[in-house]
Length: 227
Image (cartoon, rainbow, N blue to C red; front, top):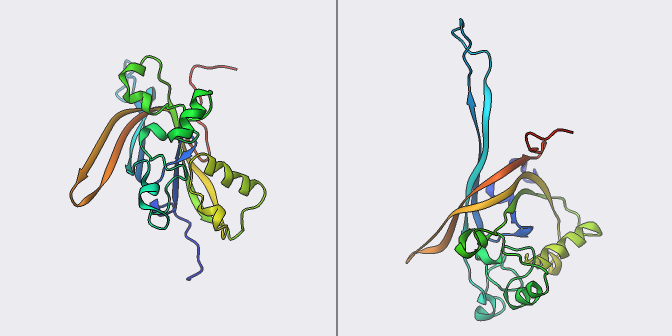
């Protein structure tokens, strides 16, 4: 029994990516799909003939344990906890782009590359009129026991370039595969809360709305589109 691999999805085996970047220390995530319906009545009948959908909406929330940029440099090697991005740019909403944050991110952004800041535009009044949306992907981590080679190694390198943890490269021992569970498309933040107390870690909590939510066995296609 000790060698049995867990097959159920839990917070301990989940991985969350926003804008293609792993979000370190995301502690919880929830999502709700709501379909409003109406049961039309027909003259001469007490019961309805059908239940018709009227609207479709997606909403949810997630929480993130905060750390700030420069924490590795300040603490020195061997002191910073695992899971921090190698670029040491912090995990605030402004660094959820598809590339590195910090000074390198500024250089890349000035050349039209990297962190596009889509998530933070929802919190910046000067960009409400031009802000775009972002995506959230949920994966389950499954141990495969196979060292990363070929495409797996490339995926690991890509993850590091996106600000992910470099630990898998420096210690390429076993093997994690990521199985897609949920894909939230075209999301926008509607509420951002920050809380900190004397005895607790700083926590960001975000509420969001989105246009589509895809499952692992279906894609939510746009309505009213033919052909």
